[in-house]
Length: 187
Ligand SMILES: CC(C)(COP(=O)(O)OP(=O)(O)OC[C@H]1O[C@@H](n2cnc3c(N)ncnc32)[C@H](O)[C@@H]1OP(=O)(O)O)[C@@H](O)C(=O)NCCC(=O)NCCS
Image (cartoon, rainbow, N blue to C red):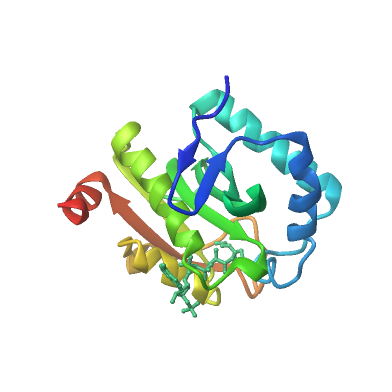
């Protein structure tokens, strides 16, 4: 089953091809991009992540899409939706996430991709809620959550269960958006 493609004025969100591994590995080896993740990723780790994305699409009909700039059909990152099954009170939940190559930041492209993913979640899949979470240190990411109209759930801030105590990225902020909130913003 081929993933549904999404289109925005500047972007195409599409399924994964084997040729995406090279630019994915390059992006995930960049310390600027991976600053708020525990570590950069090796090529093998990227191949495994890409395989997990493909399986997620097959199982659920959505996932993290490749974000391609329509100009030159260039790979510029990934964005999309995934089931989060952390051992936390708000899970299971569908999470929205994003990662773009650094030279594409600051143009509203992550916002554009995320809007398309949220529209898909709420209008095509009729999901009740989408969440997003990140370290308080990752200001670009939580500012994006706010710009999208997601609401910070301060009482639900949490320590990431996969990071050890004392790790600087362990604390996480949780943002949420319900289908009603999405529909209210579209009115
Ligand atoms: C998080 C990330 C995707 C945000 O990218 P971004 O480009 O800052 O996000 P947006 O698409 O919302 O763009 C916002 C910026 O574009 C500017 N912009 C320009 N044109 C715009 C437009 N048409 N619409 C909206 N914003 C626009 C905004 O003013 C803002 O600029 P600023 O950063 O100088 O304030 C990016 O920093 C990234 O990939 N980080 C590494 C991976 C990561 O940490 N992922 C999140 C893990 S939780």
